[in-house]
Image (cartoon, rainbow, N blue to C red; front, side, top):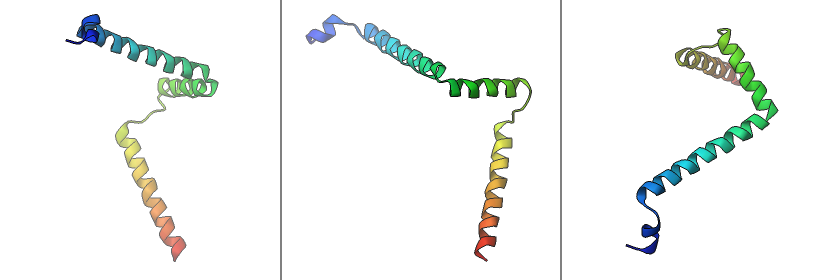
Length: 80
């Protein structure tokens, strides 16, 4: 065993990694909460959700598929 392995156990290393990950998450959260524009968007999204202005993934996917088809159709007409 080398000197470093004697100083800190595997369990301690796992705990330190976890603490490091948690601190990174806290820093990201603080960064978001300091950004007023982002916070406005989050609040707007919360209101939308609470008032039922949401759609599930399959609905969004279908809407995007239709938009893509319209865009292709529009591109074809422009070329003609």
